[in-house]
Length: 318
Image 1 (spheres, one colour):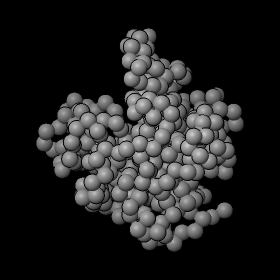
Image 2 (cartoon, rainbow, N blue to C red):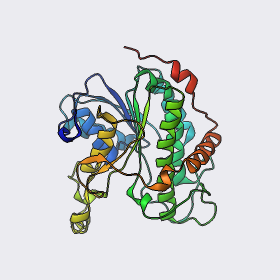
Image 3 (spheres, rainbow, N blue to C red):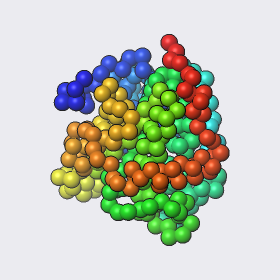
């Protein structure tokens, strides 16, 4: 399929394909799940709140005829939750795609830590996804699948060299968010390099949603219910924003487009909005020295080196 022919509202037939999406209860994760399910995929919707997760699943089923979805409790800030969820997924058939979307967009004003002792934003947005991807490497290899890490255009707005990954000094909400996205993007590119070197049949890509906001997104009961005030102020930003639904287009294309390849960075055509296309990643996220440093930190912080050798020997089932 040529890129010019891609229609984000008319995806390829995904029947027989199985995808897991983190952070499925709202925003990009919900709309990515809806788009995948509407195209026939089996979608594992994950989230940390069981009530919101059930509401999101019901919303997908209302909006996509014959949607094939299931739910799974998963809190990416908690390594125990990550391991438990991954164990459930590994007990089933191969996985064709993993969308690493969950994250904190509005960090707390003061630095907070998780029960594992890690800075909350870093743990949620980056560290938990490193662990989850590693835990699911074998089913992904069995499905010759893809992992897509969710970056942000904010990583091009300043040089945030992630030396102090846990922000023990100089924490600010903005720095916590941007640095977590620099780390996430660097991990996505480093994963592809390492998977290729180990001959593991998995591609790793990064995608960003542009400037996608809730007030420009259609209302969906239990998922997106912005106030009239939020609608008003978000619509004032119409020239530089788009809906969460359109923001999910880049993520979904990176996950399912047969022409997409590992190591690519996808985003909206106009940076903040538009149809999905291959984009230019911020320079800092491509620095292999930084990426290796970040990777080694995550490996030691989680105590989980990725099982490349086993994954390289895994053959597609079914």
